[in-house]
Image (cartoon, rainbow, N blue to C red):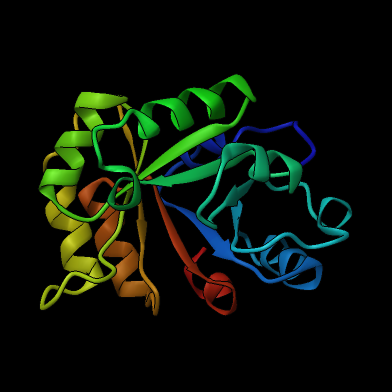
Length: 189
């Protein structure tokens, strides 16, 4: 939130997979940073977060990029599932995020959404989401989607109850970052 590092830079740098911690306020942000998180994910705005951490912040709530910027975020998520209609909303919101200086992470849940995202906005960062995907778990879904992510793109996975073995498997497969609950950071970073 201090502008020194971009979200994309935080997950692309270094050896191995980057841990992005879901946090719910300044105290959790401080703890996650101390435990080795390389970025934070927020689902709501929190007063005092900018003073609590120097890590880049990913804005997760649905909405407009302007809301992410107002919350002090460095990046925002656009979900193809919400914006897949061919009315140009995905393209407009993606362009607005970039104009505001935000990194834009495009969330995809299946091969069709991945193809649509690549055709319509060709994002630098993809969030491989396994939420709401029936029988396949989040880990399996992320690994399956990763196979179709073009070289040169950053891949971020979300694993709700991440264990060290799952993070290691994502790392071996080539995932750049993983979003985990804040309480898991020390054992995964």
